[in-house]
Amino acid sequence: MSQTTHRTSPDRTSPDQAAPDRTSADQAAAGHVVTDVADATRRLIGLLDADQRDHAVRAVTDDALRHRWEYAPGTRPGLVLGELRRDQRKAVHGMLAAVLSPHAYAQAAAVMALEDVLDSREGGHRDRHSGDFWTMLFGTPDGDEPWGWRIEGHHLSVNVLVADGRISATPFFLGANPARVTYRGRVVSQPMQLEEELARELLDRMDPAARGLAVVSDLTPHDIRSGNSPRIDPAEPVGVTPAQLGRRARELLVDIVRLYLDRLRHELAYKEFARIDQERLHFSWEGSQRRGDGHYYRIQGPGVLIEYDNTFNEANHIHSVWRRHSADFGDDLLAALCNGSRHTVAG
Image (tube, rainbow, N blue to C red; front, side):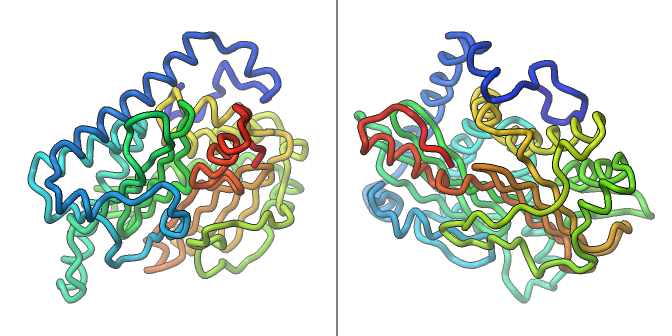
């Protein structure tokens, strides 16, 4: 599947239709991802000395720490990228690249590099640096026990949990400040362009009645509403549903969901997409529809929440997140393992 197009994908099906069409080769491919992620993690562990391991590794049962995630600037537990050797830094990037799709890894790398751009714009008074990203391991990929990791810093948080041969990777946060760098009116850098453009195109494809349902407020929230809470409460969905959209708008709504899920490697993303009940999605927009003004949108459905916010710094500062209700942090996998079941707990 393409990560950068919004054309209709040939395998767009309902969750009930998706499973029978998947072959054993697909399952094997997903297993290869688990192997790749485990190998990349072992590579980093093998490069750490005893003191670094003590700082980097915590028990996967430390739920308080696993659930304590953040996307604002500040120090975190674990190993900070800027203090690692070159080979260790490359190993951390290798862990990210093992989970993320190529385009999402490029986005993550750009988000990290923007810390230096932001630091320069601020005159260095906040001492930001592209090395200010932390890695924390929860257990290790040895034996049959669950394990995982978090790679996190300002505007980036990827939370991975591996259990019973399956991978969870939410909350998944990407942000950008500056979201857009221009030269004489032309864009030089805009790592999250599609997240904005596809949503605007969706609004353009709606008829007036559908747009009236989708735009629920002229004012924007201060930030993404879920923030960095360890748990999200399923709020009453608002906005427009697929049944209230024309065909082209309905397809584009699904493509926006795919854009966020396709931040993962396709072997993982298709499984996540199969869990989505497309007909029960809701899309809502808040704020101005005029370019350059603050705006926010949310896509919500059973087991999925996507939020996008661009309100700070004269609407040049993006926050976006993909979350999965009770499945965040791999808690569904851990619960299923505890219950002796291989079935995913519904989010």
